[in-house]
Amino acid sequence: MTSQSFAPASTIAPMPRRDRLVPADLVAARYADVADRRLAVTLTAEDRSEEDGLNPLERITCRTHRRWLHDCVASPLHVVVVTGTRWCRSCERALTVAIDHVAGDVAVSCPSCGETPATAATRQLVRACRASLAAAHDR
Ligand SMILES: [Zn+2]
Ligand SMILES: [Zn+2]
Image (tube, rainbow, N blue to C red; front, top):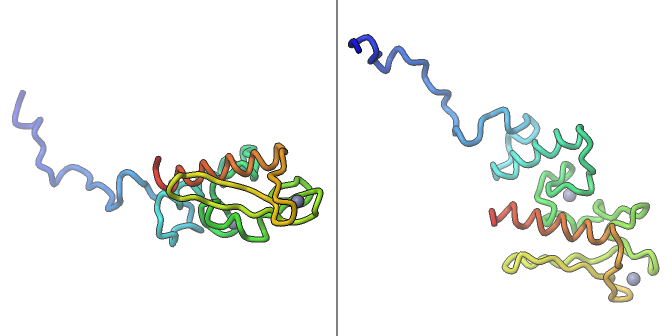
């Protein structure tokens, strides 16, 4: 071993001035201003997965609102009548989504009949909201 093996630090390429846990290429330019870095990274990853075939209704982030799903699922934009997502087919009304941040639970019900539709679309919505809660709180 010679002194040559101990190169002075100045000859080593400097590390990019970024958080190494969140490299810039993990966040798409359109989300660069999203304050929650974990959200920005997940939004970017899900956008890419969607191009590879991820069902948009399985997403835990929202491209439109740039938020975690549970934070904007109450928006009328998250009612999809044709798939029965957040929609009571019997009453033809939008379902209410109650988010319990403490328990990490999600309850969906119809404001008209009070029922939780026993449909794949409702189970999918609840599953995605629970996953979104868990990801946001890192559980
Ligand atoms: Zn949304
Ligand atoms: Zn109903």
